[in-house]
Figure 1 (cartoon, rainbow, N blue to C red):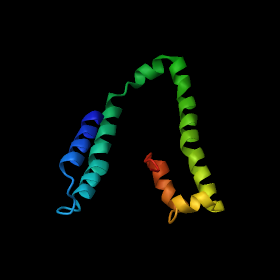
Figure 2 (spheres, one colour):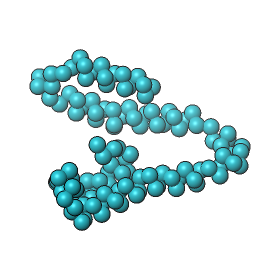
Figure 3 (cartoon, one colour):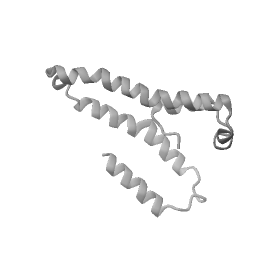
Figure 4 (cartoon, one colour):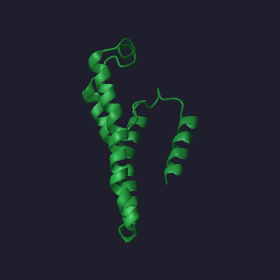
Length: 116
């Protein structure tokens, strides 16, 4: 499912290079993707998740808190470093983060969208 969506995006980028004739097409396509298709993917993935297999093994269940802590560290520490860098306003951060503030960072950290 994910590979098919990626392939469709690559094909769309190659075939449809002219955005001047229909400037809002990609914006609408992103709205459909993030608003409908991605939630459907996660719901279908959740329906296929086998909770009984997770509860069957104590060692597997013990890994759940470890992964939660790792997730918090991986998502939280860069956000805190970014916020600190914006507050101190170091010379390299002024150039690459011009116009950004810590509230603009919070949706990206919550939704898992990269900072690229």
